[in-house]
Length: 471
Image 1 (cartoon, rainbow, N blue to C red):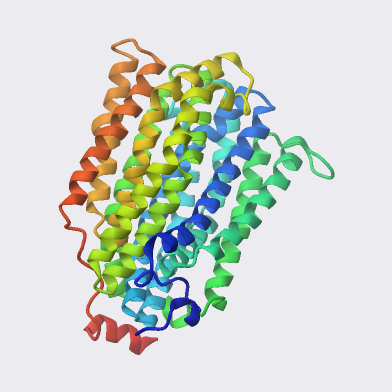
Image 2: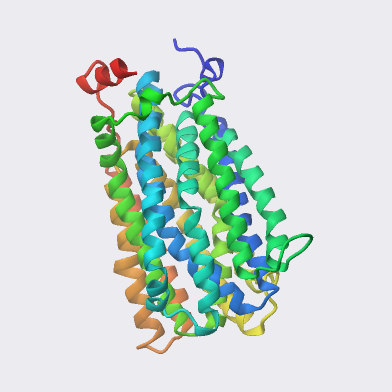
């Protein structure tokens, strides 16, 4: 019998012992990290809201562009996370470390590429998105400073994903705590010019975010290289390994395509939102941030499910992997029901924390009244998608993500809002329809069981032997 993972100092072993406590123990640091990341974004919205509603447009529009890059990082990173989790379940440490090194190599290079392309297309992209003229200059500055932090953000996501695959979610939480605290300190200093700093306005918020992402990325790199928990990336692990990268891309590429295409869809959707003016854009931005915060438990349990599925498939225990998904789904249902009820009844007052503009609050209240139930449903979608990711079978995630935005939400938002004359309400109802239909489709696909096959090669195969020899 294998020694417990904690005794080996390599995260949490989810292939043995009671599942519910293990899932919760893995999920709560992810929930807190996700909440901290949401607070990270909310801090910008809170302080910029003091400058007026046009200042809120910059982070709202940039968030959608930023999410394209974030989706690419998370999509490609899942390939590495899945391999690490399945190699861990199989007890193959050196291949696990090699997978982590190749993930770091690929994603940092991708981060520099995304930043370079983003700088080149930032201005025409904002024009294409019909950015309101009174907010264009600030949004351009905010977007470019955000792009400057991309390589560091990609490095941190490698660290976070690899640690999650190992069953260690405490380490990323500690790094997130440092980043959020630093951002909370720098935001008012740089925005309003407190102490020795000049008043930079909207640019100050973006600079603060980029600086804190650089710190988070550097701390994550240090932890991976030094090996704080018995796992570390060596120089040999950073040498190009074509077979390992190919496996990583086969897993991550469909997810990256699906999430990036989804992000492009959200970017197109913000163009529809922008046609109704800055008040609707600001309400949409605040609503999305509150919804993301409400979905924090679902994100944590999705990551816990992905790790449990990956480790148990690697250990040839598909029935235990399936049981982990069912337990996570039951927990998220119990958590989200009261949370979404609060959003339904108190959406307007919640929004007033960020802005006092009457038009913005009216639109935000409508948004929560229409979408709250679909937020509850979306929690189950996140758990199911996390399970597909952990198995390494990511085509369902790609199809569901693309279908949710491009087949349902965008066409419905345009038709309901403009030709049918519903205005912003049409956009909110499109959000409701897309989440509900996707949840139904995802549950049917999951029930087919095609995700229960592991994706790592068998021990002793040529690829595995090569990795060990080079290590």
